[in-house]
Length: 397
Image (cartoon, rainbow, N blue to C red):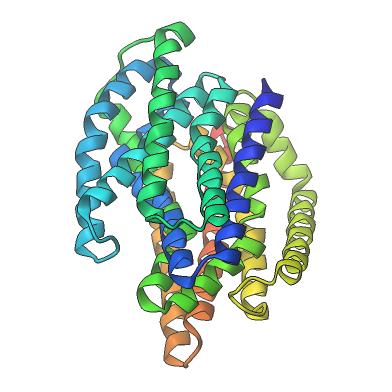
């Protein structure tokens, strides 16, 4: 089962990477800008409609049926609100495209977590990776035929199509067939889910908002350069981080003591592996750039260095993120949310300082994002250490 899941995961990530390469190497700057915006909004727009209940599916498999009923009602309603926000802020030209985008991305994430919680790894990966495989086929068709459609709308329709297929799979594998079901307190679901929503939104902003900022404040050339640099120097690490994040929460749920021992005795090895892996993929991106010569131009060494730092700390962040997702209680998530919001302040200040000093927009955004990730990772490990002490009965300092 794990081999099948890894195969689907690998094909999906490779498809997305190849689609990014094709777009950044063969299409116009306008098309690259639209594709980059679609990639960013998919990650951001899912957060509000879910209200964190996707994480509740992982924590409480016995409440799957109840949570799915709640999601079936709230996702379409809240997705319309997301569409209106994207339209009002001028990010998308139509509210209904934003609404459909939010429905598709939220449904995809909920389906992914549902199957993941019940150890249906292949279906879980199909729910998350299916649209990426379809998107690569669509981009490949565009490159071969020269046809150019609306990349944002086409991507949304592909995602909704995969949602329908996975909904059929959920009908074949209902909650009652996978785990004994019991109705819990909806208030408790939303209490922890709301906290997950805030942390997920802060995470989504950290991962995706930088491209949206470049698209809104810069030119299409800026957007193309930033996205192309991210494609070669940042996105490849997602292959490792994404699969590790996929496996780690269910693993941690059953092996808490082993994880704590690993974190205490092998932390230097964890840092070293993250650094070596990031450096290797950064070098691979450098070689691919010179081999393909994308239309964005020459490599920007400042962006390359900043994306290396981001990739490194994002790799380290996987461990505390997975741990707190399983063992963090509402009060600890409150602490995490507050400290992460506070940690945004220096990143925002750095962005405005660099702009005031006359730095390029892409450098200012990347530097602010790198600082934000450093702060997030530091805070994440701090809260993780606090939870570990509390579970061991040691008073938090």
